[in-house]
Length: 368
Image 1: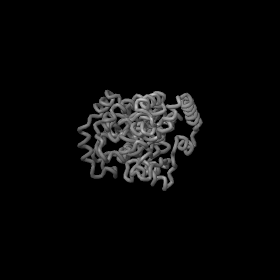
Image 2 (image 1 turned 90 degrees about the vertical axis):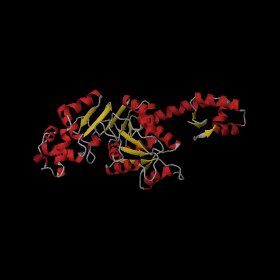
Image 3 (image 1 turned 90 degrees about the horizontal axis):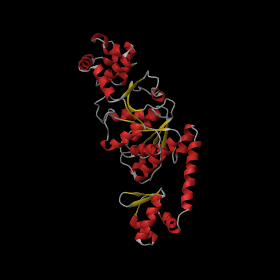
Image 4 (image 1 turned 30 degrees about the vertical axis):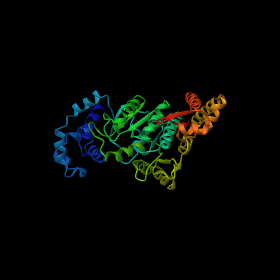
């Protein structure tokens, strides 16, 4: 198995050998090693390589299979081929699955159900909160959350899964020793400790624009369904949703503000038949998964919350009723409360410590 991975990685490092050509090589020669050692005339027998024989030989001369394998070992990057026993079974079913996957972290169990949560990099506060909450509910129900580690909705989804002590997988549009975007370095480290960061791209591959549609087919391919939280009309998240449809997977969409450009993609999906999502239960129900654990967890959380509210002082309870489920500035809260700023500030702090509200940057507050 190690020899197979060594030479499969070497083939994967040849710049123009995508999944289709690598599969053609393996089918013709029977093994990665035989494909790697093939002569020019033997390579010419493969229709997919017509005209590329000399280029392949030229790139092959500059690649040391053993040396490249040692680099992966030093970086603690593991690999899976299509023939590996723990290669994700759902991913194996898609058209042109990656012949080789690279991973930092722990490969999930092959029977673990997964759902992808994706959306726009530029998103609203509402979108981030919904993605975080849905991801938390999904992992609480025993699912793995898959996303692309981009800024915006993807980051919120990974955060939500990690905050709920669940497992999450990030699929990159570059090689796994790189972090893209750089702002997510800390997030990437947390994902590696509590899940996996994976890619089909070999070491030293930068995050080029053409890599992300390929990345998106893996995000959808790993999962039973894809949830789009926010997406503009030309969002990459829609590409993931369309891949899911082509792969015969479920597509879900979260409705948003009809005036927001970040809702148009989701509303388009809903018009075309995507399942409307408000809670994780909607997703579990459509997928035919047991949602008893999710319902029980939600019920327990609601009971705790109701108990906290029942124990509030009268001034705290009245103030809580003034705070909406969207950001509101402290000045507006003070104005609506009709009380002194110091008293309102003390009650806000008390409500925050009890987990009933959350403070956001810029002295905004939101009900949780």
